[in-house]
Length: 269
Figure (cartoon, rainbow, N blue to C red):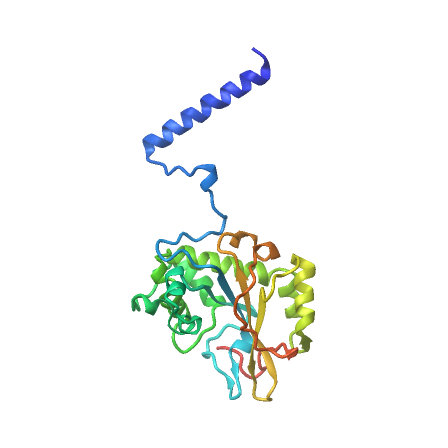
């Protein structure tokens, strides 16, 4: 028998044996056509939404308003890019019912059922989130879970792990590093978009939007970056191929805004 044919036959025998062992062990089999994105999040119910909004925070700006610092005294000052949330858009039944998108933004999962049960997370993930999620008066992690996750039946550990991974990819990439380099300066929105497209490719309309706060000096300061992402392409982020055009205008920063740093007198204990 030719060598190539013998190799193929051996491969088939091994594959058959492996399948038989897996069947006896109760393994879950995923056909090649059903394999999902590496960072997919299984959705048990209401999974027919159109996009995710990945909300990342620029921590010094997110924790700022006209009166000064708004986060708690134990707020970590590193890293500068933080995680706010990963928000599913309106499920199809709410769109069919004509529910205003603004009401979905306000109420989220409470439209289906109210459940304040906090997520059960591993100690390692809880520590990871504590370093990157802003320390607000009430737990932002619990808020994100109860408002944006629980009604979809998503596994909390998986959800926050994926969201944290997306945050890490941006923070440690060229645009995140450029923002850190320019902290303390004023920049143009067009420049940030240019950095992003140079690094990751052309963005769809409103694929990246900016949110600003006003500080005690009356300046518009960067607070958040909102990315509109394809639920089936989270693993491609931050490549532009994983983006979708946003149906909603949510950008409220001026053409030029400030990249704040932490006040020198308010270091955490």
